[in-house]
Image 1 (cartoon, rainbow, N blue to C red):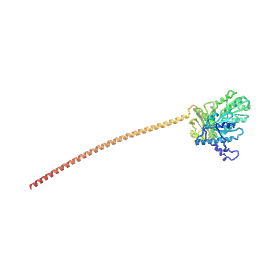
Image 2 (tube, one colour):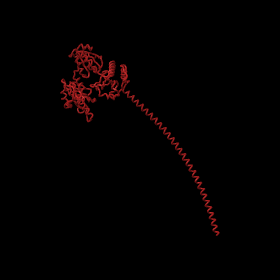
Image 3 (tube, helix red, strand yellow):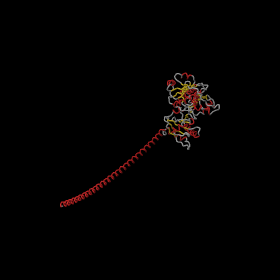
Image 4 (cartoon, rainbow, N blue to C red):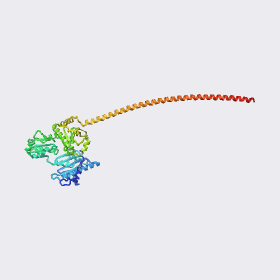
Length: 473
């Protein structure tokens, strides 16, 4: 189990900065070490000192600075809790640390299986605490642990207090007296589920009549349900009561709270939760929650319907994380389906400007969820289809581009061929012109040569005549 970082210890440490009046002073950590570092040598002697022993079985911290800082914060919260519990008069309560790596043998002897968990040893019982590791939440839970497993309702005023408990599973039985064997069976069953499930009993016939209880009869109340289920087969043995409770311990509607958050989150149907986010102190949240309660009460016989209500005001540090992870706005009510393992989710669309869905509309939506017509995985498939369409469009664009490129290449080739033909023609013309010029030049040269020859012949003839004249002298 992974713990959230809760800085309540620091807030309590500096509490007197804002509260200066007596009676409103928050406890300050006084710096005294009260939390025991348990190991194979000392765990038996330490645990014998206390009526109740709280053991934080933690993962080995190691050399990580972040892990060391987180552990320091957790240890500070435990120190503050130990300091507060030290002032109790009726019970001696101790707190100890057990390292998963160094003290695995001790953990095995104590029957501790899950690291990063808190185990409470009281008498012969071991109670696992599945809540937030904050000083106030842990102390409140320990107060519940040290209370009697069965609370007695003696009068009508106490009965009204019983009816005001809405958020927990509760049982109430009517017995002749505390010495009744049937009451003892009821009490033994209560010890099995204490303090997670509330057990009440009355020995008053007036209270029993108001609760519509017969002698040795036990009623089972789901959270937020006005009408109880009468457990059949009275009088009951302890085993019969335990079996009935175990078969009905997942209510139609239950509230996640700091002291049970991990227990509820891990208890999912087919790996999914139907989650309702609604602030009870907000008008819209209150209205929507009333609708959810109505639907839950109308469908309480459906074993497949289990709704978890989360009031964001109870978890202020988690609100930004939930809004980011689920992509929702928690300033208004929300209902959706969440997968526990990967937090994939799908949410009912509700416009802030519109009225809340009616009970019938919400019931129809829940029926679609239970029939797998609405599923977070389907939402992922839609996203994948969109991605595939985008890929197809890209492929089409690429094909068009390729065709355009091919056309351009063909045009370029044609142009090149035309240019080559033109160049060839020009070259041929130039060659012809050159040939003609050469022929003309040759003719001119021949003419010139002929003229020169004629001139030479004339000169020779003249010379011959002159020579003849000279011979005459």
